[in-house]
Image (tube, rainbow, N blue to C red; front, side, top):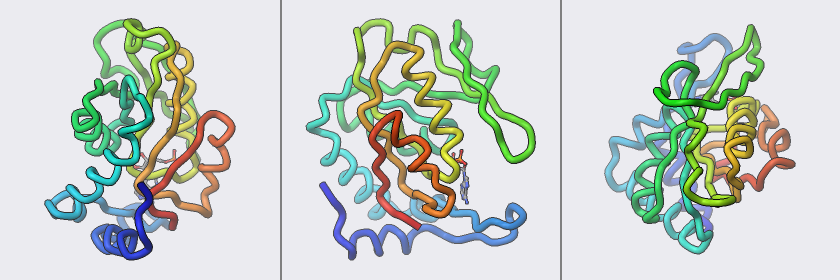
Length: 180
Ligand code: AMP
């Protein structure tokens, strides 16, 4: 399913732009969309329709806002949910991937056996927003290292000027509901 220009405008109107939360950036606040039952339901229904035919085995969500969209989407698609978490949060054996930030680096992890029950599991990666693509790129590397295939990565928001979509396009197809 593709959202019409009107649908996109509706979803965009539910996201609050916050200036001054972090220096120099507009922070896109999705809590205003989440607390609107109609808007949140409309987004999830659209994503469910889009991915119903993808023959997915799992939805992978990136901590923490990727969980908010990824987990209910997995449940409505009837597939499992796998979290990618910040370093040190997952209890069993993990694979980890470092990625550079503007200052320093960060690290994300996935359980080593996350996809062990299915050869070449077909997964969808979900997060709320893609900016530079660093977090998504590290997550895609984890999915590959854990033996699964990412058939698409999906974001509610794509900050076009940050070029994250271009950065990860060679690793997996990218879909964003809203381009800003
Ligand atoms: P990046 O790795 O640069 O693509 O950053 C993506 C992650 O940072 C996502 O998990 C977003 O939730 C968060 N993020 C980055 N920029 C913003 C922004 N302007 N507003 C809200 N969240 C952001």
